[in-house]
Amino acid sequence: MSKVSFVIPCYRSEQTIEGVIKEIREAMKELPQYSYDVVLVNDCSPDGTWNVIKKMSESSNDVLGINLSKNFGQHAALMAGYAHADGEVVVSLDDDGQTPANEVGKLLAGIEAGSDVVYARYAHKQHSGFRNMGSKINELMTRIMLGKPKELQVSSYFAARRFIIDEILKYRQSYPYVIGLVLRSTSNITNVDVTHRARTVGSSGYTFGKLMGLWMNGFTAFSIKPLRIATAIGFISTIISLAYGIYTIVKKFIRPDVPVGFSALVCIMLFVGGVLMIMQGMMGEYLGRTYMSVNETPQYVIREMSGADCE
Image (cartoon, rainbow, N blue to C red; front, side, top):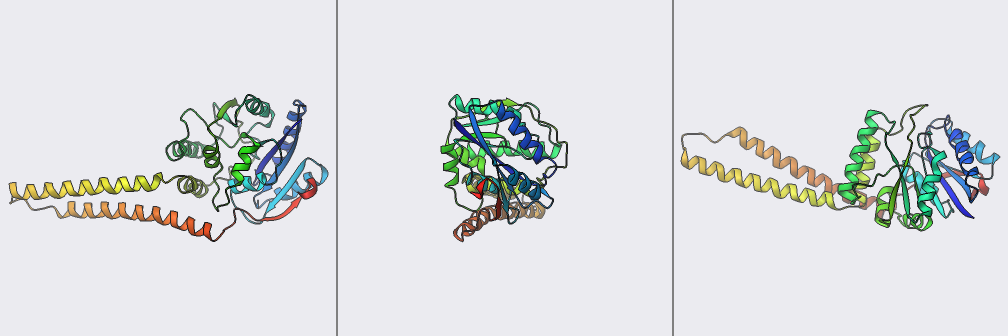
């Protein structure tokens, strides 16, 4: 009998996480060929999420609760959960009920069919306009920076084989980005269609700042393309500046009575200066993250654990 481990990062989910666990249990009753357990990682939620997790973990032997000491972010919470999940297949999903746990059989069927990783694909996402915009930007970023196939849709709801999780856990640096880790581990990835539900309680924990931080992880941790793009922009701006300089000289010889535009010169200086600042900022971001990694800034810190014999 194969074992499935569900890993769920939790934040502001005291009103929803019990419903998610109930749905997992009901779904797994329909899949008797699998045993399962659930790893709930509280990402220092400011509400009573940990109390709910602790109560569930103490009253059941299929739930392990992990409480992080501060808010490290969704992907760091996933890494903490993966480190304590021992299933042959690991399923990641959200804590708000929008990712349908009762359709996990579709993901597991994809794994059984031979895929290394199976992502849920949504025909219609029930997110806010802001989150949908963020998803589109993330989609574009992963395609350009990480080489994700255009036809592949990635999401927070996916199943992965044990060896993929083991490979992900080899990443010890300070800024984990699970999508990037998956894409660099295998190309045998497929999609299955599932329903995306509307949020019934609360609002998304992703702010603009958190989304920007997530994108920067993808930019700087798994690709040097931003540096190459910066180099290309610098080269193009140099060519433009050189061409405009030649144009100015030629115009002065042809029409010496026409004064050379001071405003045009200022615009060029501002343009070139802006490009240089962008490139320096990008290089500084890489250097800063390298510095943080060399100093072994932790991905996460566990305050306490509860249930499942506190593995």
